[in-house]
Length: 319
Figure (cartoon, rainbow, N blue to C red):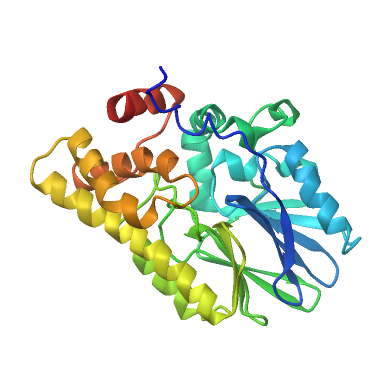
């Protein structure tokens, strides 16, 4: 076993240093060196939290940071997508409403239970005190299609579906008055995009739609908060480059009739020099290439990951 890579991120046990950064008058970023981020909007009369952390115990640290700067009620939780590491901490906030796209709701119905078991198996450290998660799944109480506008007093908050990418249900939180965006996992910085449930051919166009908003600040799904138009542009650029590079290499291999394992080895070798230093590169690549190969061959829509499928894939590509 000593020569075999640990399955997914089970060997990743080092705690990360948390930062809580103000990006604009009303927006804050909770980031942790490439672990999943949380975005916070502090409005005139209430607080909105986008992406909850993986467990209520971990969400408690987000709440502690929020309480250092405001005592306003946390009224809204936004799920930018359905992944367990983003949603299972929701109960800690005791929100009045949990908001998500209808596409995200549909994905929870279809694959929420399987995804929960899969993710907890992959990322033990990210589900600290997993026993604090209440039974069942995190369910939205309000859903929308395309666009929803909230008013936190005089502050306008838009929830937007700008296209498919990381999942088919991706939602961004946009503050038009401050040109600040909470992107969820559509944008990553110094962290490898997880694309196991992605739409590779759609994702670059969705990033173009984000760029068209001309954000001045952005909270990515992982990595440091991006301040200023130049940093935001860089975050969009590197995310787009990674997704495009994976697609280019995998599609060429699939078109040449190569099997998945061969395509994986060739794509990993091609991308490792440029992206191998990014957080969770080794974790994401087997899932990303497998999904990309599916999309390039027979599966336009992502197949459901289960704990069993995770291990079978890992054994095939990394065993």
